Length: 192
Image (cartoon, rainbow, N blue to C red):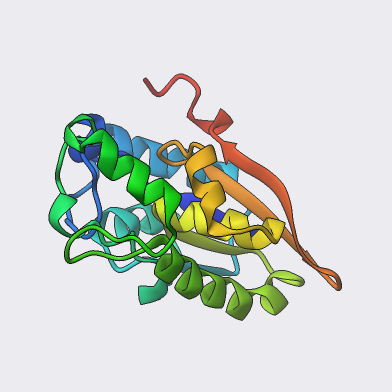
């Protein structure tokens, strides 16, 4: 099984900021979310993580060796990194949603993100047929991995929500990937 886990919460997440390549640590709740996610999943045979600190700290909750894969890094928001979501102009959101090739100034498009995440998923698919693999990443790569599992375009990213420390599970079989669960946050009940 391939488990794709969004990292635990940071203060920037709690403040409603676009958080791309900025590298803040988990906050106290984020560490508790990471521990809860690790406790909810089987002991993994392999853990792969984004290079960003919030993902690496979440991956550390599994207590096993962690492998960094740059392809799981968050979407590069360029000039918008650290901007409150509410301050991004409406016309910018419209342009972004209408064109997979649109990118923030100095940033990355959803098409570019989708290409790198799909390649990373393909590289793990065979192993996930016989072993439990956990990937710790960010909201945009989770959505891109979901699109890959469903065999749909990356524009679906605008139609789904991924909470902090949410788990997505993808089965791997002879016919390819299949989505088993998405945005599972049941393990976070009672954490606040």
